[in-house]
Image 1 (cartoon, rainbow, N blue to C red):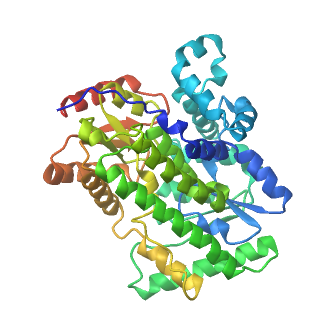
Image 2 (cartoon, one colour):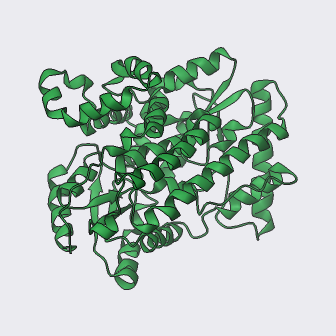
Image 3 (spheres, rainbow, N blue to C red):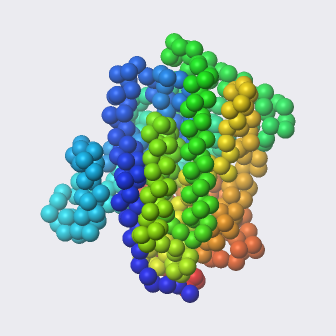
Amino acid sequence: MMNNMSFNQNQDFLMQSVLDIGMQYINGFDIIKSNRKKGKKILAGFLPPMELGLISRKTVPFFLPRFTEFPFQSLMKFFRQVNKLGCLKAIINFWFKNEGFIKKINSSRTNINAQALTNGFSDLNLIAEQAKFYLDSCVQTRVCYGAYLKYRDYFDLLFGGLEGNYCLHFAKFYERIGFKKPVFYFEKPYGDEKAAYRYELVLKELEEFFKKVEEMTNESIDFNYVKEKMKLVNETRKIAALIQNRYYNRGYVPLHAGGSTLISGAYTDYLSDINFFQEKMRLLVREIENNIKAGIIRNYKKEGIPRILIAGSPGFDPELPTIIKNNGGCLLYLDIFSNSKYYELIDLTGDFLEKYAKFLLRVNFEKGTEDLVEYWIDKAKQIDADGVVFNEVWGCRFITPSFKLLKDRIRDELEIPVVGINFHNFGENLGQINTRIGAFMELIK
C-alpha cells in the first residue's frame, strides 16, 4: 500500500560532499585552464571507464558533458567562495525553501532548478542539430557532439570504445570527430578473456594507447605512478559497492535522482582528480551515516514510499523525478553502480597492461543488450524495487531495443509494474509522461 509521507529530493545537496563534487563538476573550464598552464594534456571522453586518462602525470581525463554552461554559471564564482567558507549549505537550503519567491524577483537565467539544468544541456543539443549531426541519434550522443563542436579547442585527444558498446552512432561520433581532432578508439569485441584472440587484441590496443600518450606528453609512462592512481580507482569502486549494498539494498535512499546523477557523471572521469574524488566519496559515506542516525535519510521501504528504478538510461528529463514524486514515488537512478560493472577491481600485481586487459574483458559485454537486461533485473531484485520505468531513448540502437525483453522478464520473475516512456529532447512530452507515470503509479497503490 502506498504511503503518502512526503520527502525532500533536494536534501542530497545539503551534504558537503555532494556540494563539493557539484562545484568541481561545474568548474570544468577552470580545471582545464589550470591543467593546461601546468603543461598537461586533456583526454576527453563520454563513457566510462576513463581511468586511462590518469596514466600520466601530464594527462587528465575530462567527461564531455562537463563542458555544459548552465544558465546560473555567473553565480559560480560567488558559490565557490562561500563554499570555502562553509556557508554554501545554508544558502542552498534557503534557496530550496524559498524557490517560488526567488523566481519572482530573480532572472530566470540564474534560477537553479530542473529547468535550468534542462536549458544547459538543450543548448548543446541544439548545436548538434544545427550541425546536422545524425538527427536519429540519442540525446546523450547529440549533447556530447554539441560539446565537442563548441569546445573542441579545450581538449587534446578523444578516447573511447573501452565500454564495448557497439552502437552505430557511437562509432560515427568518433569517426566525425576524428576529422578534426586526434581520436583513439579501442577495438574490443564482445566476450571475456577465455578466447585468446580477444585478450591479444585488447592488450595490443592498450599498448598502442600508452604509446600514443607517451608521444603526446614526451614522457615515458611510470607504471608505479599508474598503479598508485589505479589503487585510488579501486578504492572508489569499493565505496560505490558499499553505498549500494549497505543502503539502497536495505531500503534507504542515500541519494535521490539529482544527487545520484551528479555522482554518476563525476564518477565517469573522477572529476579529473582521482585524489579529490576519492576523498569526497569517503566524506559522502560519513555524511550518509550521520544523516541516517539523525533521521534525515530515511528508509523508504519501511515507510512504504514506492522506490522506482529507472532502466534504459542514458539520460532522462530532469523533470522525471519530480513527476514520480508528485505521484507518490521516488525515482532511483543507479547508473553510478553500473559504471562500477559489478564492482570489479583492477588487479595491480605484476604487469599492469596484461592485468588491465583482462580487467576490461572481465567487465565486458558478452551478449550485448541481454547483459544490460540481466543487470537491471538484478538491481531491481537487490533493492526490492516497487516498479521499473524504462527510458525509451529515441534514436538508441543499443539499449532501447531491449525493452520488450526486460518487460517480459519483469513480468515472469518480479511481478512488479513496468512502464516505458519516450525521451527525445529535454522538456518534450512532459504531459504524456505525466499521464503515463500517473497510470503506472496507480498500479502500485
